[in-house]
Image (cartoon, rainbow, N blue to C red):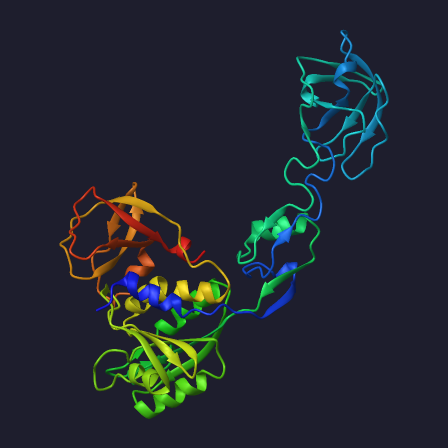
Length: 394
């Protein structure tokens, strides 16, 4: 069996980045992946700006009496006149500093009438002024190609006046379930049947990382039907995910179908849950044969398929979490690398009481996965590598 690291290296060595790009309105750019570097369209702030409500003065002109005539009013959004020597200007947060003024006294330190002010306290040159370009200068690199946009980065783009953004086209990810035992939610449930959960879970995961989900339904446990369905799916998607049918049973046909339609690159990993994962190419389209048990499907998606999808979408596949949290449990060593469903509580990792690969409720309860290396037991208080679900899906 392949180790997780070797399998992931082999899988990523096959990843081909999408090259098609498009320009989208900024208002729909959240979650998309930048196709080009973005440089600052202007300096930020674009002008010397008041950081507080108060009074703009020239520091060297403050008299010993600290009394000054009030000659100008500058609200945000209004271009000020030049500084009038030996006077003050009423100014508001975000407003442009009158040329020649170099200090803003907060209103709490001022006694004001309609015509004059009296300053209180001590002052410093440049106080309460955001200088032009103090955040970024025009032409500076602010976002690099391959960055996935989030609401904060979209806001930065808006700050620079960008109405449209160049992005990679969304990767089309098809998801197909296999198994005669599967029914769609809402259908009458007969003896021996179960509802299909993995495809709906994978839909949410695919869409949460900003890719296009293609629903390919359920395929019965038939070799010919599996081959036909996978071949047809390859015409409509960039990457195909299947669930079930990758083990060695008589009704498991996905692995053989991949082999028949192309090449099987990876099969059987030293991972728990998820040992029978298959990866290969059918009609030159990458195919991940995820295990049928829902937690196995989830874990292998997060650890192996997700880095591939991020790379193919033009992103970095690395998950730079490097978080270690003390275990609140003891556990015997196993022979495979295990991904345990855990929850962070009181700065410790709590273990879900049943780690069965069929218990999807363990993932609903958990915050993420703790990594148990093969051949290594866990002692209470021992730091474990922790992979949080939000960070994995970021």
